[in-house]
Image 1: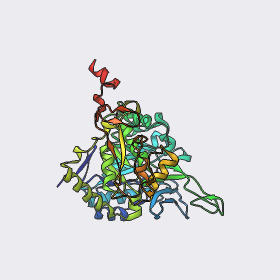
Image 2: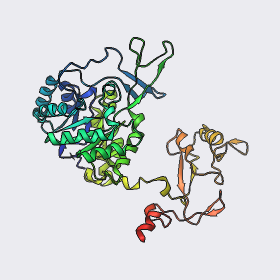
Image 3: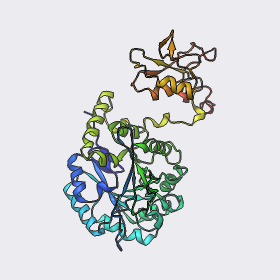
Image 4: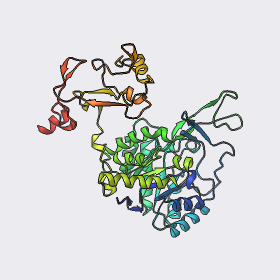
Length: 437
């Protein structure tokens, strides 16, 4: 059986599945239930400094986007950091860590961008014997208006400054949580790296409004006739999160910086994809809120089974394996040619592929042959865009097949050039040329 034990910046856990800092990690009761279900670790919901309590709304806190089958695709959250007493949280953290020494407990923190505020809270967290801290530079609502959260995460100079303060005043590993509400994710990552962070975690939620009530004309969720922007999470943000993880993993200025991947992770496959792109472990929130804590059991068994089937002995075998294959568009092999093929036995004759291709693409799929409803690729017109694959409701009915070297491309009338699956070795790749010289 594959070994999925995780060691992330010295923080050990029995598996790479952690709960992210969010409502599911707000108190000991939840965290204990999570550990009993099998989660390898948690990031405790964000603590603030001692003082006037944070006050959350007492009405709807979530907006949602659903698929056609009402499957939850995205969740908008306007809840703030913990509204529970700081010292109650600290006592619970200490007790849970004592009772569950093999599980990872990282404490999320957000205090004003003042060195004294950070110096005051760090020893309090250290005393709990938690495994590390996560700096919440990502929350896009409520706290950002107070000069915290993403208000800090959008300014690289502030990130570097606060990370330095924390590294100078704590023995605990420091994980810096980054906001996606920024043009270039590499810049805050570089700033955290320059400040000495032990790792980064991303993505935090995306600034959003998920809907408008067309009777009251107020954003949803609606609080007494008004609404606010919130943080968007769930399966819908996964592609954005994976791209940002990959950008940091392949950036020459942050290469080797450990990454904790967050964003729409619902299945073992999602987790494996994040880790293949460079994440050392993953954090989950929306999936647990949708399906309950026991979903981790499917993640654990699924990951183990896949690793066994593929011959991967440990997580080290998969972390970062896909990163070298992420490149800039200019380095893609323009000599590579693939064409769509329709499995006539699997085809249900729905016509989606024809309509999509006829109306919006390259008119490369027939609808009738000899007066009979029939869908087939016109190879001379097919550019290999694979839109038909994505709109087809039958899995593997339409596939993309690379043309072998020397085969005539009927669209261009020219022989297909050899297929270079490793573009780094392609003779037209300027990087390969430079290396050869």
